[in-house]
View 1 (cartoon, rainbow, N blue to C red):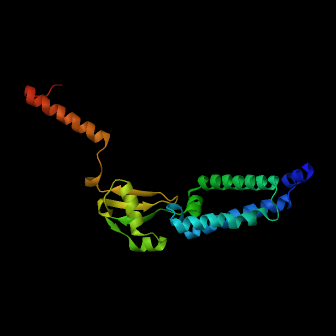
View 2: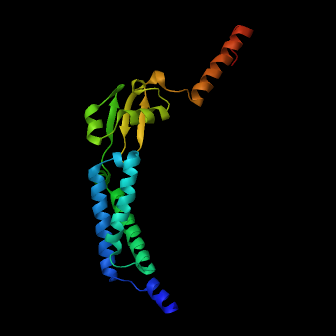
View 3: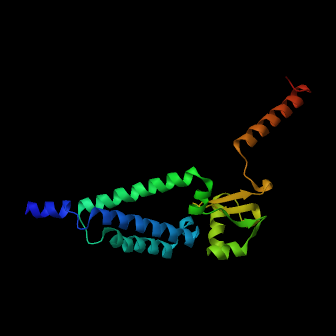
Length: 193
């Protein structure tokens, strides 16, 4: 009994070299597919996108493990996957052009308070989804913005018009100082040094 369990856990069902090749090939294929499909998939997952991602994980699982469900085979696949990812990330951060090639460039979704229709259509992003992100960053609508940019990692950066930006603690401190000076003028007729 124990020898059967031990064998199931420790004996790899495919040669280790095949496991490594399978893992690297699936990683590369997924990286290319996600890059080609664009930033929208990483920006905000809707219900259908989430279902696709979960199913995608299940689909590629068999491509990675092959005819192997051993513990050692699974650990080997995980180690290879993490190692390849670490190498790719380090290589991508070493050169700006490599980073852009792997991750893409920012895409402007709105400029000067107006949506850029071609960019939204190319990324298959709905205005209503961007409206929600704009509101989360403190604006009421796209009209309150000077730019809305979708970054390669999926973050949406909203730059608000200067007259629409919320007050900062520095703004409050400056206002407090001005009020203090006004109070001094009213009390003493001139500011104190």
